[in-house]
Image (cartoon, rainbow, N blue to C red):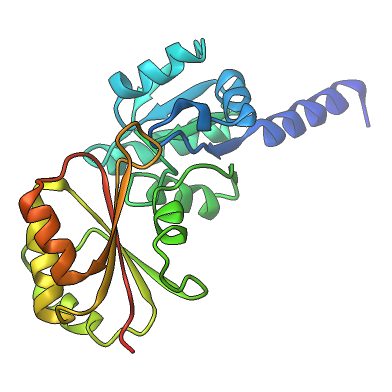
Amino acid sequence: MCEDSLKDCKFDCYLAFMSKLYIVPTPIGNLKDMTFRAVEVLEQADLILAEDTRTSGKLLKHFEITTPMQSHHMHNEHKMVESLVNKLKSGTTIALISDAGTPAISDPGFLLTRACVENAIEVECLPGATAFVPALVNSGLPNDKFVFEGFLPVKKGRQTRLTFLAEETRTMIFYESPHKLIKTLTNFCEYFGEDRQVSVSRELTKLYEETVRGTAKEVLEYYTNKPPKGEIVIVVAGKK
């Protein structure tokens, strides 16, 4: 093998090594939950894909990370996948973050990850913050088997999904926005029964974090009298 060919081979191997997508979890509230490794990856990446560059800009500024950012959210991710795959194939190291928590968990990330797998591009997901894990653990409900439902359908398919889940025996986890919490808890009373055990965790890791536990009726009454704010995770006991 000639020297030039050997150099080309080494260069190609270098590109293959560097072609990687990092999935990087970020804190769901408390910045102290950022890991050393997450900071290191974001510092060393060539490009950071952020769900909202304004939100992530505050995080990067706090940790003095100057890596260039590009917006990557639910409204443009379909259009971006092909160009991002090409960047990765050319040797660019890309880190993907969302506004909070682990990307692809009710956030953008799945489409790009799938495309990377299909194109034999290495994907590495760092461990880190995900809101439903602490909510599940501190709910006091069985956590040996559970199902993550994310956000329920807003209109179409909502009744069908709730009817189906009424027979679910595993603990169920839902994400919900504060202005829809009362509606969702009301639905749980209707479809699961007023006595079904429920745990609502709000503002996890933040200053006003709280977890309210009780029957669906009790938790509904609590939040009817005290309108909720912040990010919300609902954990519901399965059918006995």
